[in-house]
Length: 72
Image 1 (cartoon, one colour):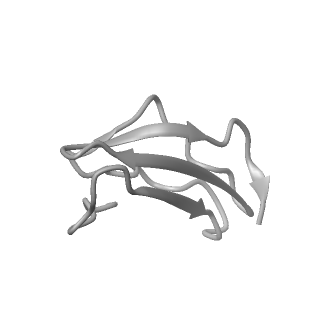
Image 2 (tube, helix red, strand yellow):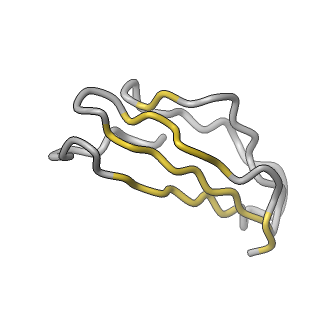
């Protein structure tokens, strides 16, 4: 579960990187209700994906995300 950040300022940006070191497929990622994002694909084992958000004063809105898996 990825919780909603607290104490954000309007226009603040964050990048979240998900690294899969599980030895297999990852389970489902649950995003906090304030994240507004397109479809998300979990990274395969030994890889990662990142997603960038900007806070608009109410929600964390996706700016971009990694299109393919990146080696850890």
